[in-house]
Image (cartoon, rainbow, N blue to C red):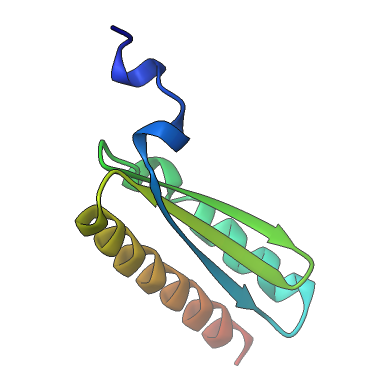
Length: 94
């Protein structure tokens, strides 16, 4: 039987949700993306994982989890992190 670490993430984490956050310009999205990427390795765990990507002015956070409880927890975490990154970016511009 293969080790769980050898199983592709799609099999280990069958539940997924995507957060798409739109910003006024690509520079704002880039700042938020950079901030979020710092947390990827610190937060991923045995029951959930996340990926952060940017396309133009949109930041996409994909949260995958082994179960719905872990998905909810991951979604709460990443929603909070996006909010903090956005508020910090906005405060720096004032």
